[in-house]
Structure formats: C-alpha cells, structure tokens
Picture 1 (cartoon, one colour):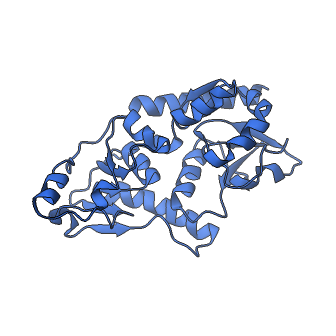
Picture 2: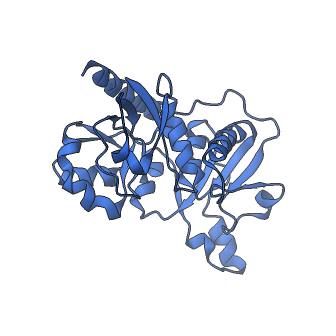
Picture 3: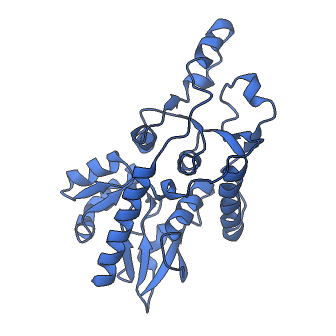
Length: 280
C-alpha cells in the first residue's frame, strides 16, 4: 500500500494546506498527492491510504474511488453537500466509526445512522514549541478589520491566509513557513482563521479568536477550552466609551491552552484506524 497527502487545487486558503500538512505528518511517508475534491478520480494500480482530515466537499467527487483507503479523522461535511453524502451513506458505514472534526458533522452523520467519533482536527497535533520567543511579536492574521487596543497594533505583524495566484508548490512552502513563523515568533496571535487558531493553540501560543459563535464549524475552539469572540460585534463602528467597554470584553493576554488530552485522542484515533487498515 502507498500513502497519499491531500491537497486542494481550487482553494486559495492556506488553512487547507495546513490541514493537509498535519495529516501527512501522521503517515509513514508520502508517495503521492491527491486532490481533495477529486477523490473519485484517483487511479491505481496501487491502493492509496488517505487521511480524510478536512472540509468536504466543495466539488462533487464523492464517494472516493476504490483505490482510496480512507482513514476518517477530522472529517467535516460542507453543509451544501449533505445531500450528496446522504445518497452514498453506505460508503461511510463501511468505515465506522467516522472520526469527525466537529459536533455538527457528527449530528448530521448520526441522522443518517452512521456511527461517529468527534476527534477534532489534526491541526491540533502540531508539537508544542519548546522555546518561547524572548522578544515575541503580536501577529494579526486576517483580522485587520477587528478593533484592537492601540498597544497591540503598535509593532504587530500582519499576515494573510488567502493569497490568490500562488502555485500548489508555493502554497505548500508558504504554509510550512507560516507554521514555523508562528512557533518561533509569536507571543500572541489574533485571528479570524480557524486553521491559524488551532495549530497555534496546539503549539502553546496564546490566541485571541474572532468568529461567529453560532457557526458550528468553529465550535471546536470552545470545546477545547478557548473563547470565541463575536467577529461582527468587533467590526461595528462604535465610538467613545462604547468602544472602550467593548474592547474590555476581550482577554488580550490569554494563557496558552493545554490540549494534551486532545492531541492524545487524535493520535490514538489515527493510529487505531491505521492499524485496522493495514490488517484489512
């Protein structure tokens, strides 16, 4: 059997590549790269082990071809593709329990009679950093519109996770460099990107995360002990004392979150499924 890393050629979001890097780290090696949205087109002759950690589906390539040997950990179903998944529910039943990224996906699959396990996302398995930077920086990731205290904006580094026009090879290189950059330089990360928040939390970096608290996709942050600040509230044009009151709602000096137990669960879930696949 050979091992494949997923990529998504149509995505311009670096977070997709970060998810793939985290999954590939759990493979003994990477023999091939397959497109996440075209798994139905994967050809042999050798079967390919693929860890299904990611957001499915933007495309329509479901179910995967018979050459794909899936390991379902961190699986998330795109809401507008639920009908497609439901039509092929027998495929998922072959690999129960399905390790899903979030409770919303678990609830959807359970409604189809599919056994699930909420494993969360493999981006939470990045290793803890061993050294905290002596002169660490505040890094603002796709959060330029969020109202921040001036003391944090001063000297902060701004980063984007969406960079149109990059080749697949450049995107992969950039994603790897970003992970290293956060690990080695951040004393605080302020972000609206889930797959910036999760790997930074995994590495022991304090994170302030802004999103829609009602979005089931990002509930994972709350599940692991983090806080989700309402992104819309902090984008409003507030003035005077209202602004001060709003900013005071945020803990701008959070402590790192210990996700050791989450990492262990993810690693055990992946290892268990890998052993089962090898023994099949």
